[in-house]
Length: 186
Image (cartoon, rainbow, N blue to C red; front, side, top):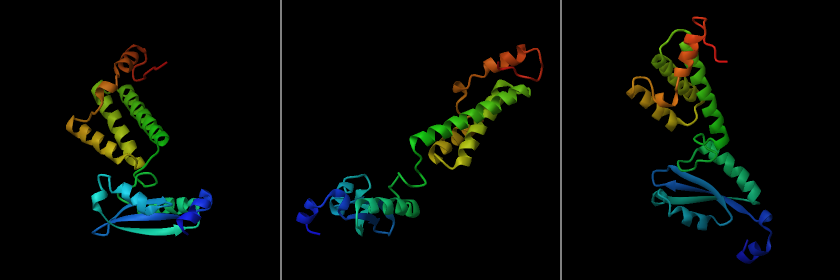
């Protein structure tokens, strides 16, 4: 299709390409889609990893919609180094928020249960912190954050966020509940 033909064809009907950017050693660096992959490739040349690109391959599709669909499948299947969205490394903000809330809930449930069982505040913090880290590890999401928290837990004797976890209130309620071994939170 000539440039003149492209200009007179509606965008939804124009062919579009999936382009792949490759490193010298054959590593797939990036997958994208564009009506003009050569122009997009020039933009990627200005990224921090652009100097690694030595080759581009194009796969043309009849419409941008077809290209978008194929791009998403290719990214998920091929997991290019510098793509984020659509890869196993990506979790959208809403999903990340949900996972972090659930991990925090696990931390508090375990910590309060530890106090109910007679643990000290420090022991409860430690147990809750490990529960949170282990919950996040089990999801397979946010590996960088999980590794950082695990490292902090190991370096700090089993806690990474003691200041964020004020369990004094729980210990006071437990001590004044009148029912040893049972924590009242109401």
